[in-house]
Length: 151
Image (cartoon, rainbow, N blue to C red; front, side, top):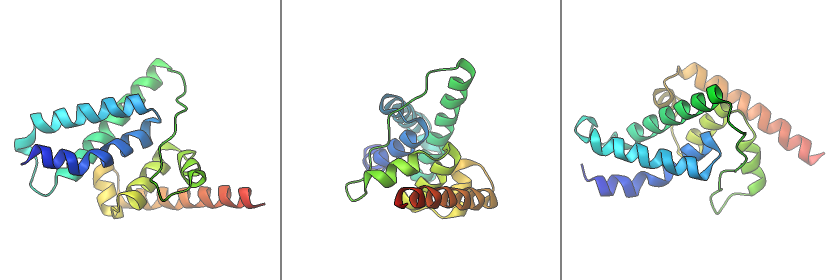
């Protein structure tokens, strides 16, 4: 495995997923560093062609662990938002970021990373039907938010 190539190809995806979960640039950067260190430590266990999936799974798990830690230690609410791609309006990104963690994560992986529901289920460790349910709820909430802004 060419670690530098895998890093360069996946660093943005890992960072954006972490930012989606954590809403903090600094925390997302910390998770990214941790994830890539784990990749180096476990490179012999990662199957060729599955590097991105492995990285996103480890990222999701690391973020869940951080969120669980914060919940147990009652940290302050994070307010920073995900920086949107150049071709997206900030309003839509703000609406996506206002969704619950579970909803915005499946939206991110589906629409921004291009994963299918089965792949998202594998990355997040949930069933495909749960992914579809979260997608349905997220779309409903986004539709309500959009209709609210238009009226």
